Image 1 (cartoon, rainbow, N blue to C red):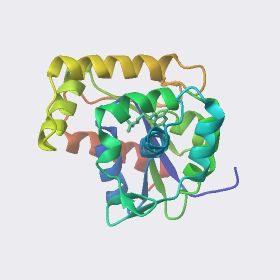
Image 2 (tube, protein in one colour; image 1 turned 60 degrees about the vertical axis):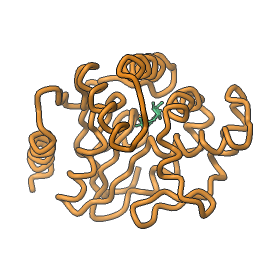
Image 3 (cartoon, helix red, strand yellow; image 1 turned 45 degrees about the vertical axis):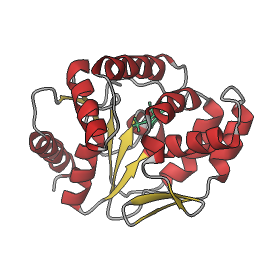
Image 4 (spheres, protein in one colour; image 1 turned 180 degrees about the vertical axis):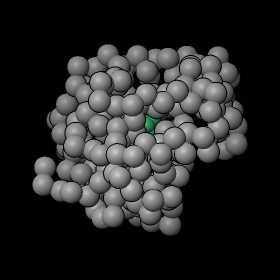
Length: 222
Ligand code: C5P
């Protein structure tokens, strides 16, 4: 990989807070930010809209490859339509972890993810940022929190968006999604050995951001 632009890879389970932390770390360093999960989400939304069977790997990969998307004004656009909220529903979340298990879909989204690597640097969050997409990342973090804390965070987010959800359902959905993401043979969610472990159960967002920045500065000698 002949690209010297530094990358901070932050991987971890659903609702661990990795997106918020990654976004803030990127802002602090003036780096770009990639939310890789949103690419899997938008591919899934398009597949659902087109009525593509979620078992049809080839059809899904074609959809993923041909996606016409843009990130503008803090929103996600699919073929000119604002789908920022539409990709976050629980139905799309659940279907996404099935679609993301397909190696053909992952391959189709690879180049798109790597294209985010532009100066001065990139912070990327997902499940396989450090293991597959940016194996030469300067810093790799596995960010997690216990399932009760993650469920509380997700529940709060949903309520803030005016989406009703029962706590028990949120916990169940997180467990199922973690299990699917961890059990798949290709690019599973895993704490790979060269990633530093960050448990945010008892940390504030500022503390988590501060820790990632400190590790990065140590590695980068900045
Ligand atoms: O991070 P987020 O919860 O938005 O991701 C949605 C789903 O996309 C995950 O449950 C996972 O199945 C998939 N995903 C993935 N690889 C990534 C990012 C997300 O498989 N790098």
